[in-house]
Length: 211
Image 1: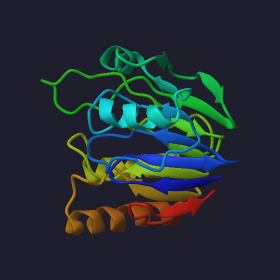
Image 2: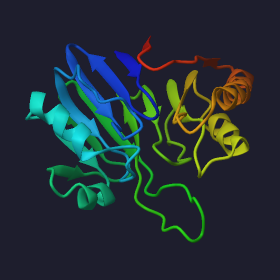
Image 3: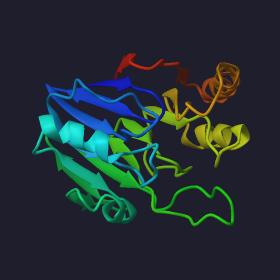
């Protein structure tokens, strides 16, 4: 299985000729090479994690691709056929096994409503929490860790990585950070990953990692 990181929060996972797309949003360059997509996971309704244009473009090539997301995504993406998923549920889509964790987005500010959010574990190997600090109830081989966001400070990101204690970790959700900010986040997340015995890998957009 191979994961390719795109800008911001978008990941594309490939296995046995099939692809899974996670969070193709507005901060991600339009996805063009999308042959073989069997599923799209949208962790929550914010535009930096999905847009109608991104979903429509993928479905043009893959009309049978299944879209999965929490109830908030089902409501927000009402023009699409979205399967509602929730905490602790497991779905088999193509060659992929998807297990979902959590229920809510991290708090941005008390004045802003807290929306639905799910984290997703792919094949009991790769975990991506969406916009949350939800720690899964199972060991994590590879963690895609949010590194910068309006709802996140670096101490919280460090605590999250420490709590998950993955064997390997790479940063996501970085388009809101300058190059200096990305380096700062990487230095801090690398430290706590390695303190727990894990390996920290920095993936630039379009770079891949074999799992």
